[in-house]
Image (tube, rainbow, N blue to C red; front, side, top):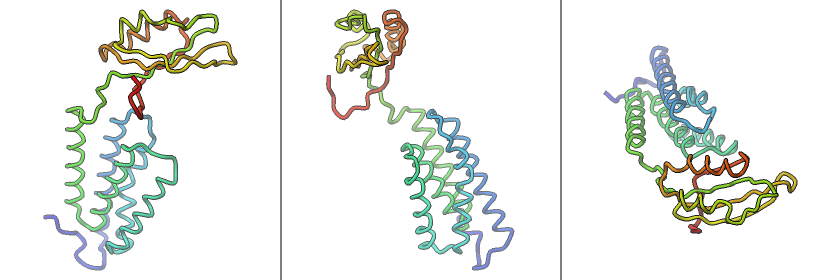
Length: 222
């Protein structure tokens, strides 16, 4: 059932077409799922659609020699890291497709499809249970205010209402000194208070720029 479709050292056209068609189909499925679950606006989906096809082609060109195949694919993998850095998710999908392409290129079509199904099912399950999500209510808050507005305690009542902790970390001038940018570290009372806090600050800072995001923290400063 999991045997290779390449039973001889010489490929036949039917086996090659079947392998390449399977690689392309698997790549399209993975690409579609990546595109519909990606929130970073990445344009990697086009590459993912054809990556298993390319990997399988390389494996067939080296005639199934596993050592040569791994060396070639390792060199291919370095291309990604010499370009713009990708996210951990993008890198995981690239290696996922390289593994599938390797299996299909060796002729193990059923194994390649099986790996695809298992990995995608695992990703779906982990996403549904919220595995790895950051449940922290700690936020980095950046607020821009006019220079004629005193920033000392300007948002204390709002922080008292929507946060359990708050700390002014930095103050800097911006827009050629005509505005201040205040950076706070806050801990929200409830995750759903983010929008309410932003709306309240907007009414006080003249609807200037506000940024509220998850903390990329190296240490807890609160």
